[in-house]
Length: 202
Ligand SMILES: [Fe+2]
Figure (cartoon, rainbow, N blue to C red):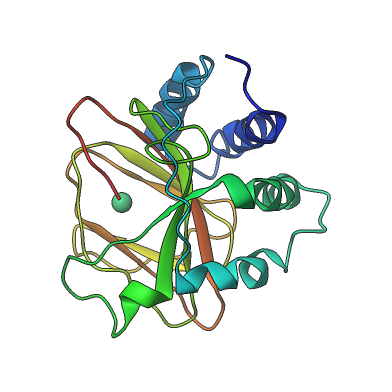
């Protein structure tokens, strides 16, 4: 199969962002394995295109850098070019989520189940949260790396909340409990996971 240009362009931009020195080494190593698998396009045609309320915050989250001549600006423009093809989902389980968090967040899937390129061996997507939202504590078997595009904080294993800064990120080993939260600005972080046959994520 030939991969559509809008997906190929995003993958190329994201691959570079996940190799930033600002990421933990384990996150960069995981991402390298994800992007290795992504060299082979694979799509079963499943699409989860139902939109949720937080989707309306995408433009506001991307606005501060979408015109920038940086990897973040290029990624933002690529995400906008993919918007109609994204798969959308959200979490409704887990503890310590802020009131109304279900409507206050959404996940956009680019490569992964129901995404623009629907497949089951990797996941490449992003999380979007409206201001003052705390995502529930959760964990999942697949290893995961995040790159933060906006102000925001992460927490791992019940530790301190940390803001890795724009372009920084975190690495979750398998089943590592983690959470994220926004402040006064919308939150957007891209992520990638290496998934096996029965693993589910996000
Ligand atoms: Fe996660």
